[in-house]
Image (cartoon, rainbow, N blue to C red; front, side):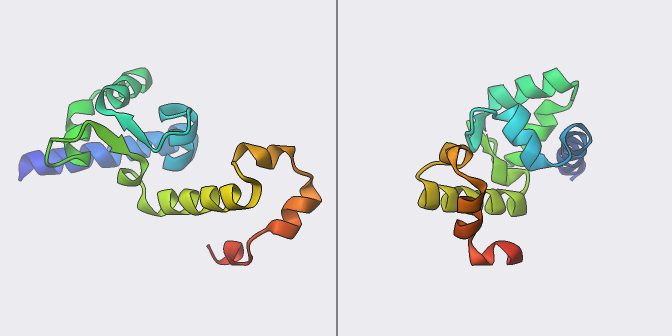
Length: 123
């Protein structure tokens, strides 16, 4: 029970550190943890990131994110379910509308406004 509390506290403290450094977990994931755009990183990569930011409880963090202890990868959704779902919806819309996320940057702002999904304001 104490071990589980320490692991949960490590997850909470890690999320707090991400928010302090990057504003939120999704932004931290996109800019620092997995800038290549992957929705998963290996445990080794996550521990490397922990060292980079000075987070010393990476073993407890990993155990808190993967209680079974058998995962080789950690996904964004394990840090923030709501943020991951929103990001997934935006990505799906971009791919459906523009064929890729990158293609958005080549579009005129007026084109983007006309193609904006109607449910975006409620998301």
